[in-house]
Image (cartoon, rainbow, N blue to C red; front, side):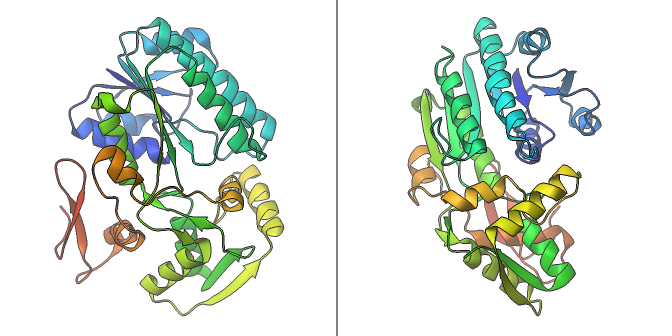
Length: 321
């Protein structure tokens, strides 16, 4: 039995689909009233309710669990104190319950660039959470991921949505910060392999895509793929940050998440062959991943991507089934 936190979030949903498809028994820990619980039930996953800072609820969730996949993250929370409290208390509670339950592997995904001494609050609190997992006594694997993209993301989807509505490519600040975007399906492939590969236990592994690109280069590639007449404007990082914080606080969906702006401040890159060396496969480049992301809403003539048994992709000119 695998316990999944954050199962209704961006990465969590992709992970649940893959694990259920592989025949794994899943238990998903959700907040009471979570709007995605019905979807999880439809995926044949067991759903238990509670809060990650509630030790009794977490202990019940960990009963008879052998592996924990912890991908819950307050990515939409704009209050730094709440973010820090979540990463400190929730992770400590979950790691402690996992130890007492005899869990044999604890998987966690963090943003690249986080550390307990980072200057930015989200990255700093993630670093504190990582230290908690390392000190828990439970065998662990921590994946430090560069910015992820895929269906439902906050990076590529935001650029596409704004461009389609306004014909604008908005570039925060200079747009020169270097990123290493990785397709969410490849992150899930890393997680699946980390569940089974003893060689990666008790390691913190940075993962990223096969390209180092600036935010402006990413936006330009998306604009070219969509072939929409467009204008490019640079907006100060401060203005975009204030707008993102306001919209997130109102429950709206800005074109770039407020917390993602932290990643643009520091950049998130590692070796281009990091995934290949750690997990034995080459992740998809940006254009191929975005083509897959756009495929469901496309028409005849667009390349469609289909998946093999291990979740890797191959390009075929056909309709996806």
